[in-house]
Image (cartoon, rainbow, N blue to C red; front, side, top):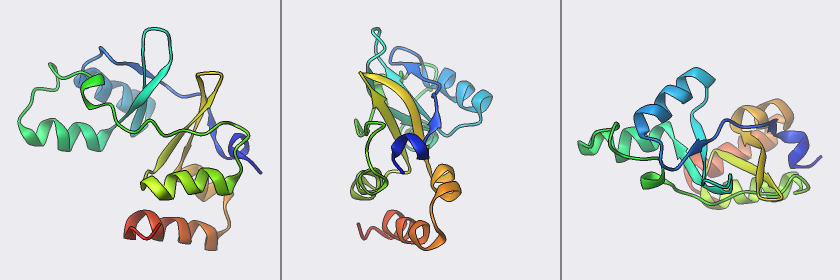
Length: 138
């Protein structure tokens, strides 16, 4: 099994110039908690999470209609579709991230989320992953 087998194919993206209020609307429409940020050429430039919007914008008193996705772009972590499950999990555990874009030829072909892991991993491996992510013992 590799990253292609784990991932949910495709991913709704947002361009860096878009505002956080628009990002929140897209997240609601798509039922997701993260959007990969892309530049004008479609190249992956980071990821924006619902948590980023709340903690780094709203909680700090900023206006989500004036802050852009690029302003909060974080984590340029990704893996290729051919990455093994161990490699993908290793990236996620090392950086304590819950979503991992899968990139092929500079294009996002999918995302690996906790829901994907829950669907595909044995319970013991999933429990170990969660322990490392949430308890910080990567």
